[in-house]
Amino acid sequence: MLAKPVRGIKVTSGAFNKDPNGYIIVENRRFENPKHYLWPVPTAERDQNRNLGQNPSGNNIQPSNSIA
Image (cartoon, rainbow, N blue to C red; front, side):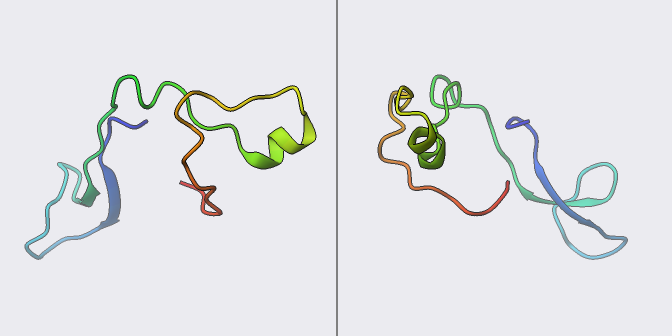
């Protein structure tokens, strides 16, 4: 999932960075070890279960309302 390019709309002409299927490549992502193994536990989940803690290095990440 993280090691694939983020694609946009399919285009038929223009000077865009496209994949072999004609979709615009918006961003190239890569898996970063060990950063992407553990993601932060959302605050709402920790509020519901006080026994949950935060994953290492997840303390400084702000919550996001967008779905990626």
